[in-house]
Amino acid sequence: MKGVTLPELIISLAIISLLAVVGSPSIQRSLDKARVISATNNILGFIHLARSTSLSNRQVYLCDGHYHCDAFRKTNTLQLLHPRANKDGTSDLDVFQELTLPAKTHVQWKRFRGNALLFHTDGRTHFQNGHFLICGETAARKIVMNWAGRPRVETTPLENCS
Image (cartoon, rainbow, N blue to C red):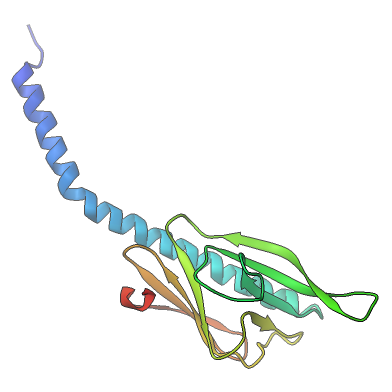
């Protein structure tokens, strides 16, 4: 007769369980790093969309999805808005695109001034140097914006997220 005995099965399960427990933290760190990289790439694409849309003769605001352009705090949702002129001479902002980040990630806009990143019709920002800080549980990245509206990605220590 061929087969597996109960002690062999128990020993095999114990070894598999031990490997899973030992490897779990590194797997979690890898997954978190992948989420942060994914969020960074999504935000970078969102910035490029905002800039290219602004070149079609419309100003574009990149804002916190929860506070619109009134404030920019730690958030997992971003919005692109453009101004709409009202008949009474005032203007409102209309949302035309929204981005939700992967689970367990958030972004902060650290800037010199303003609550939103504004792109003018020439693709430049409104004199707003700053950076988007994308944070996960164990990893962080940064998208640095220059006043010309060009982003670049950098790695950053997790301590910057606190």
